[in-house]
Image (cartoon, rainbow, N blue to C red; front, top):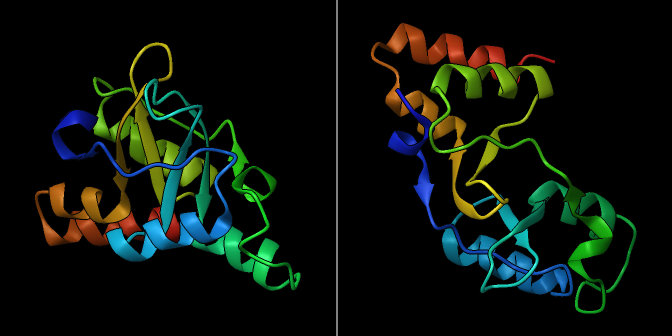
Length: 141
C-alpha cells in the first residue's frame, strides 16, 4: 500500500510568519493536532510543522502572548517526510524510528500534498492485531 492511498489530502497550512493563535485556530477548526508550515500558500513548499504540544510547551508554558508569537519560533523545521509513492510500511518504520505520530507527504521539490497520521495507518491495516501492533510500536518510547 502506498502513502497516497491513506493520506489526508491537502491539509490546512500556515506560514512561519503566522501567529501561534492562527495555528491553534486551524487545529481547532480542523480537529487536528498538527499544522504543516509552508513557505507560502501558493507554493505549499513544506518548511516545518507545528503541533499542539509545541504551542503548549513553547508558548503557553513560557507565559508568552500567543497573538504576538510567530509560528517560526516554535515550529519543528525539516520534519520527517515521505512521498506519495512511498510504501506505507516504510512510513510506519519512520514513525517508529523518529517517535512521531504524523508524517507530511511531499512531492518532489517539497510541495505538501498530504499528511499521514497513526489513525490513518490504523484504519488502513487489515486486521485489528496489525493495528494494535503498529500503534504500540509507534508509541513506544
